[in-house]
Image 1: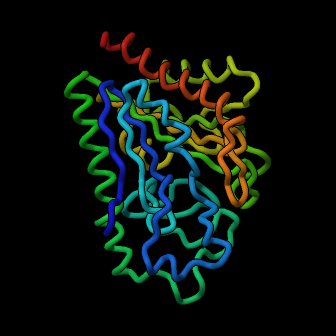
Image 2 (image 1 turned 180 degrees about the horizontal axis):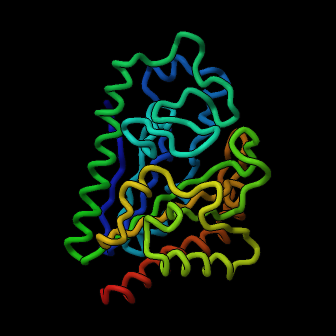
Length: 267
């Protein structure tokens, strides 16, 4: 298996996770995809570029190299469903639009998928866990920001247009409530964008599994509408004119996380 992740260690107690940014495919997955899936439409497009400023803040970053069409890093290893209703699993079988992802009979075998779990899913989560442990050991706490994006209109998954900024804290279980309040207040100051806390997206496996405020590890997911920074349909072009004002809010959110940590923990 080729390089499966891109990790850069920072100098502040913040890790930004980007589990759905990957574009690589295994030969079996690539050969089996339906034509409509070949362009990888359900990717969290350009997320590393959108958050490139995080290096200036000193944050650690962890980004996937392989597509979620191979294995979804934001689902539990046992594939327990994350949401009620239409959703996708550890090994996606449908596109967000509800159509089958693979041509009939060309899905990866159980053995191949077990390899994806061991060689792609496991290294990502081991790196995530180790970095959170390092941050907590050094600073006394750790902050995890799980960065995602999605097309603003997907009738198969949700009704109507999504808010621009969808914050998720697993209904308050993955981070201190005062942190969630501060992040929501930052979004509210930017009236040009809509936002919601724990709406359709409450946080996937990463937020739910690693966020333990009682143990001083606080996790927040952001599901960002792609209409705020890119063209939502093929060829999925990045739009700097849209992204620049969006990055203002993203920077404030990350700075808000760090400021909350310093205020709460004294460092």
